[in-house]
Image 1 (cartoon, rainbow, N blue to C red):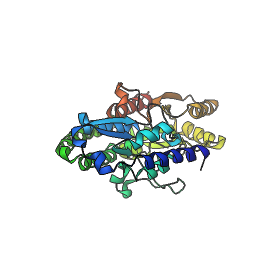
Image 2: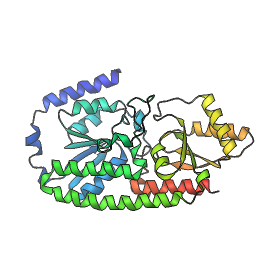
Image 3: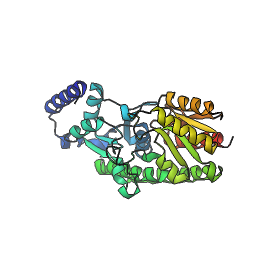
Image 4: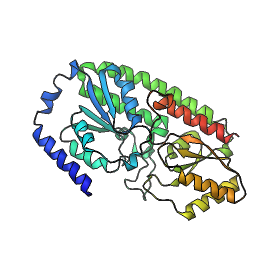
Length: 311
């Protein structure tokens, strides 16, 4: 364990021991105030806001452009989490070392992994990846709906006086997501099946590929902690030339240098491949933008992919 993480655990122990107010007492008046929610990613925060509406006060630890695989909790994060009524996180090792902090916090604050609402039979298993499952569940809208149901059920269980409120808004948001799923699927069908090849910086889009009919290749593995070697770049460059793939994609939360190196390797083989745009992968866009919401992010991504691959 690193020195920084040890320091955070030390602070966590002090706060927990000093803050002896019983959870039942702390939550007794929850029906008369907003529920204080901490989430890890922006995608989860957006889902909580759609389900909880004016009943919740939500803060995401990871903002636009932040890579959750590399995220390190600060002392301020620990203080905010321990003061929350409930914490929602993705799980499946997406949050890396933050998972160790969340495990400690469970003694004090209700913590919920929204991936627990998804059958493991529906997850991609990769023995080489620690945790064995691909954590990028939000790229299949139907999988994400299962996580949204967990959010609604958890808020209703915590704030029982407003259980019907959460159920109502969860159902409304799930209908919006059903319409989104249909939109993404129909847009994908505009690309001929043999041209639906998506090449990005890391393997974030496997669920997207399965749900909407894309062959997906990422330079890095499931986690951006993994390094990309020259052989990886050259092998993928050869594949791109052979398949005559017109465009590659960078990601908003991953440095573009690997994709730029891949583009250079392809061009060196005499084939011109463009960078078709920047996709949102592990983080939403900026706050108050269309891409700052889950629905807006998914629409932006599929529109960007279609426009680039149809050139």
